Image 1 (cartoon, rainbow, N blue to C red):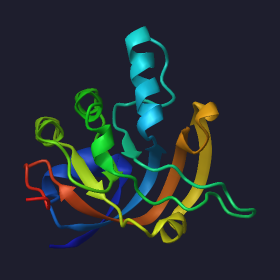
Image 2 (image 1 turned 180 degrees about the horizontal axis):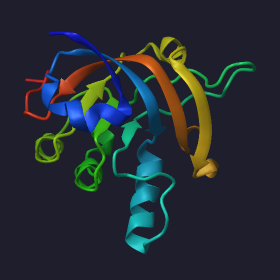
Image 3 (image 1 turned 90 degrees about the vertical axis):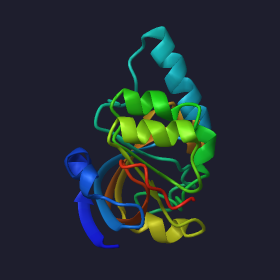
Length: 175
């Protein structure tokens, strides 16, 4: 196992060098999306409507931040259970998503899509949302504002600690 510093924009190029269990300090642009937002994204895809962000090259963090305290860019934002997004993840990976951040085991279909698309599933530390927020320098709601904490946000990470849970070789921590 090793520790690496990676920018989201580099994930596609370095995915083959990442292995389940690697510690990563992730920086760059990430999008938040949970159950309700994923459902609406798929509605938009089916209707041919413009999405809140470009799926190609994206990294999605499964979280629903708490309200933002005064003077901070974001509230507490720990990961939510990733399995709830399993019905959506394979198609998003096939559309070019390069990584996901969440917590917990993923389905065989998601793991197969990670391998097929040379993508990565990262786990963040559950129960440490206030600490995670300290690694977020910017936050902007970019879609589905009516969903409140589940709206889609563009966030900027700086050395956000994650673990490679499932790599593009099919290895996973959840065996």
